[in-house]
Length: 89
Length: 188
Image (tube, rainbow over all chains, first blue to last red; front, side):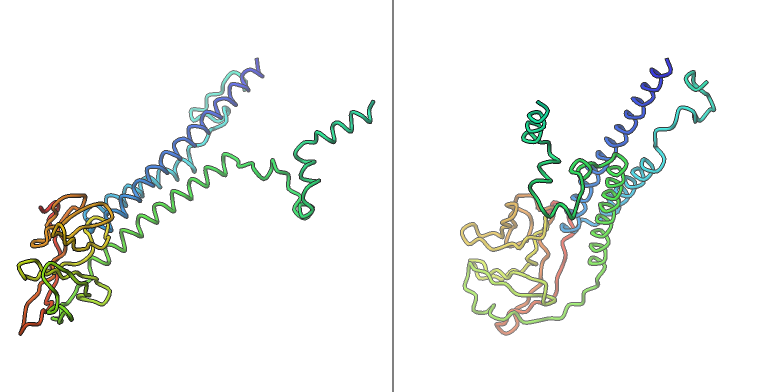
């Protein structure tokens, strides 16, 4: 029973890691697009769109930071509510 | 029997044996290939974070440079365009105005009138040229075209007209006296 729970826990952690990676890659792709649009706008002299593009890239960077810094798979022992699951009792 | 087994194992060696057997310099760098190739998820996440920072800085840098360039106040001093008087109708020549690095194009149309524009296409800054056959200014990069008389976009991706250079004919000599940036998007 205990081994089964441990296996499930590890699978859950892997899923969280996978989700983090996928989100980070998607954000990087979005930022690449934003960079291309920024270069395009700068060369064409369309200055009005530059600020929104840079702000968008900054938001993407902040989300990336938050994913790296805070969105980590947590141990089952340390739930935010203090709830301890069966396998830890 | 054991010897035979060992020999077979040695001949059908794994990657580690191949490395040991093939490259003498690898004795100085004794890293296992599996270890070399391994990137942990944590490392990859950090790499993506750095990439994100680099992309943000890149976008900010481009925007800052463009904003700085736009803020430059230019003062225009009238300057003669050398060789303009000798320009035959339906032809063009390049000159620099207002600064030495600002490339411009002077066109003399079939009816003998002069028109001058900044040479940077308003799409992605490629240099435009005068097409004698079509009697229009064309951008070779993305097939945009501008009207030679007004500088307005005829077709293609450019979002606005070319920057116009104001010219004046003084005693048969063509002078550039100012530069006017087009601001109307999709002027046509």
